[in-house]
Every structure is written in structure tokens, then in C-alpha cells.
Image (cartoon, rainbow, N blue to C red; front, side):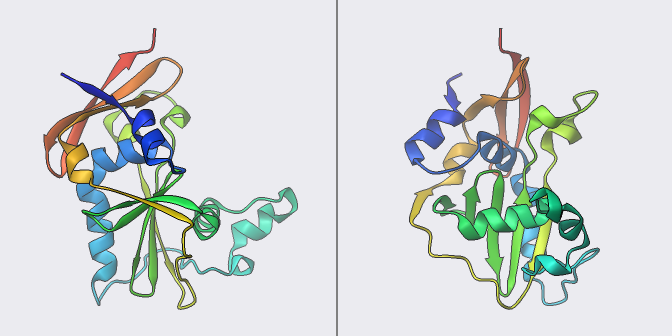
Length: 191
């Protein structure tokens, strides 16, 4: 079995992506694409908070203002709107930047935030490893910027490969291909 380093793949792309975003995309491709397709449904309704570009309307951002921070969702939005070097998946029309996977769906920006695996608390479970957090920004003023560098890649080529990335101080994660929309994983010791 040939293992490809996610870090080296990103190095070749020469853009600002965290390996965890690529790994979580491979592990959750079906779920991520479902989030995008739901947002495209004319009957789609946002459950929970409705996020816009206006951070003044966000209670959590106002609370964190004195620390010079934004809420998790607006941090993702801020990163995306200021991004310069992104990757673009030709297969799924998704953009990748840092630990965000995103796509415009009409006048909605759907962002899939990929929390780093080193943040897992307690037992390591399948659900905790695969965890992604979708958020939809609904604001007619949202437009993706013209990115300075947009590197294109084909995710279907990655789905059939074993990708490896740093998981935490003890382990690295390796994807195990299952089919073109889903992969499993295993953890291997770093030492």
C-alpha cells in the first residue's frame, strides 16, 4: 500500500490549506456534498442562527470583541473573504482554505469547518474524528473574492488513495479507500 502525505500534496498545490481539511473531506465527502445540495434546495431553511456578514448582529462576536476575536463562524467567514491562495476541487466545485471547505450556492455561502483532530477531548471515536461543522451564511451581499492564486485539483483521484496526515502528538491518520464517496481511516503511532 502506497501512502501519500497530505502535507506534501498541499505543498505541491502551494496554497494555504490545513491537511485536516483534505483528510476530513475524504472521510466525509458524501456528508459535505449533501450539505451543499440541501442549500441548493428551493425549500431550504436555515435552522438555528442565521449568519450574515454583519458581525454587529452576532451576540458571540460582540462578547468577544474586547479580546479582538470573532465567533467560530465569523472567523471562518473572515478567513475566506481575506483568502489569497486557495485550492479548488474540479469534481465538486468546492474551495479549500485553511480548515474550511466552502462553496457559493446562489446567495448563500455554505462553509464546512473542519476542527483539528488534536482538539479531540476524551476517547477517540469515529464521530469525533470525522466531525465537521457546517454553517450557512445567508446574505445577499456575500460574494467570494477574486482569489490571487487558485490551484485546481481533482478529489476523485484522492478518494482511491491512502492519505496520511498528522493527527495529534501520538498518532497520524491514514485514510482507507472504500468507494468514490466514502473512506475509512486508521491511526498509526508517530513513534
